Length: 223
Image 1: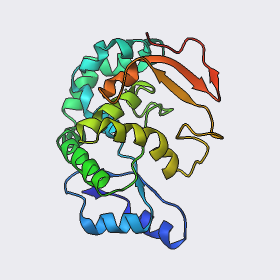
Image 2 (image 1 turned 90 degrees about the vertical axis):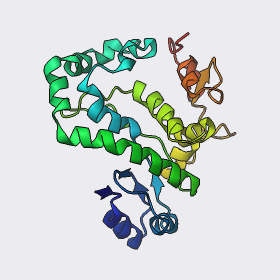
Image 3 (image 1 turned 45 degrees about the vertical axis):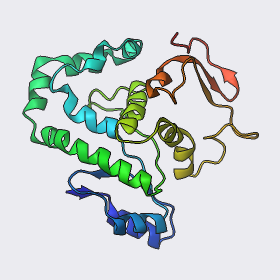
Image 4 (image 1 turned 120 degrees about the horizontal axis):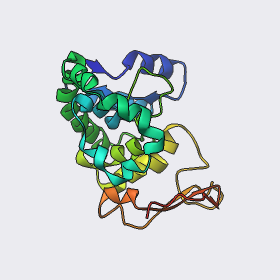
């Protein structure tokens, strides 16, 4: 099963509409023909690797539930945390054929991200987190974005490539020209860190402060 939404890409290209592709390739390598088509039609990819992880990871209690950075958000996460921690929920995930198939296909998804990145396809960052309904559990907004960066690096991207995807790459894909880079005239939206994420991508969690439109948000540091 290859879910690149090619018919949507084709129709949008024919209509002259800028296209955003969100890819979940689960069984085959992305081939040269598809990459060429994506380049011609200016299709960017948001792999949502962390979203894939949340489909199967709650078959047991995930290690990140003891991560101090995750625990900082528990006041917001508690409801879903309790749901996915319940033995009955975890048993249901273990017995869910789709969840187990995605666990196996996750390796291919990371491989295809690397293939597309190496080919020059624009990469953005997204997680499908913060879904405002009770159909999807455990997509913890704020934490999954940092997980996505780490998964991108696991897939073979450099820390700089992952950070670019989260900033200027995402802005490029959705055609936003006032954000994405630190440039005169653009919005001063900044995440100031106490660690160098180029040395270790997990250092994005060492947050000194958050700035929106040049104003520092109170109480945003993690150190």
